[in-house]
Image (tube, rainbow over all chains, first blue to last red; front, side):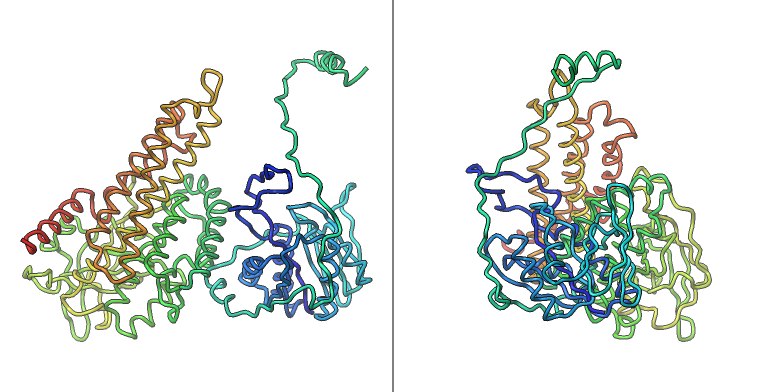
Length: 249
Length: 383
């Protein structure tokens, strides 16, 4: 079975994000970029399925600026087999990405698509669901376990009430949650080997998709700073304070 | 190694250091040993094979890449560098310089894969003054018989192989030609390892005696020419000095980052102590010195990679980086204040760990002598 793993280049999770002074977006100048952590989990899961002999080939795909190539190289160094980069300089929206991925999937015919449940830059949590809808494939979102069995896959999902397991017919779309696995580091020998793995460069036009954004961002602001809290000694004091603050009657 | 591959590796290494190696430090201090799972990961990451040529299973890094890697690795506690340093430093270098094709094919892949190496020069009664060396190698049939004791040998308790310096001539010959180098598998009969010495710091790294009693070795245990051992070792020392300088620069950076965090968290007179100018002075002085050391290391490495003789510059970078590290960890204890003296906090361990950097791989004093001697000789030649 072939597994398709879409990955996104985002601001590194350790970076303290700052809004541009004119409020048009997040300042990306000289900011460290990395693979979206949820996508790293998706790559790791695909590699584990290959190590178990379930997957035969792992294709990683990224849609974004030319530098997304580095993100794909990381995925190749972790253990993916080949990469596709769809180059575009415009801001990618979930639906655009889902449309391109649907075309990639039609071309590649994977048995399973595993991707992060959301990207940590815009936290949209849409691409996986939109992709499943466009393809007409079943979906298992927020996965904490993925167990393929023949032409089906059991996906354990983290839902509000606890865990839910859905049984999907392949091909299917799975989005990963944090507890699915702990991704490996790319080793030096594997980084060296990854250099010779194939990386194809495409454009949205190759897939007949117009990437022009359909949404306009009017303003980006930083969250309001939280003021320091106070400690109370008794429940009575707490109630008194809440009353004074007008939080309860 | 290509720079884009190297950059990608450094990014992974920085994460690995911060997410795996640093969180494991507490357990290492308690057990005085690196856990097996971490050691296995370090082998998988390729950290034992940085300098071995690619055709022997290594990464084929140049000196600048290797020294930069050591600097990044040394952001975590020193034992991580120690356990890899003899493989990728002295022994790899000696094999590349003096090894036959068969010796390289035998040992470089094993070292790159993470079999651990030691280097034995120092003895109870001798160090750099090889005239006093007692360990002897005597020809016997086709092979050699070694006898003697090596002291303060890094990694001795877990080494699979040691590069041992032994005298092959009773007379002290000019240019130390009475000393030869031998590759000695540590499971050879006649070898025993003493108890690990107790140290001031650097938990998890071990030094001990290697005692050799009638250790029989085949002819091909001799590395390089008979009588060429000492020269070969000295030729490999420049890289070793850059490695220790990088270790000191990396650890100074770690200590300073820790002090920066503490100075922002710790409050006095109602505000973070980072607001006080005398604290800021200590932070700034440390930053300036670390930057200077990093520049010296990078310059010396670039010159070494271009084929320049960097004896003087490597010594200078080692002296400056290690003395600088000593000053930085001292300031870091000062910034921590009373907490800096408590074992509960990191500052006192940075202070203890850093002290050896000014001593091993050439003390500050012996390197100052070398630098001055080199300067005077150059002046005399030009006068």
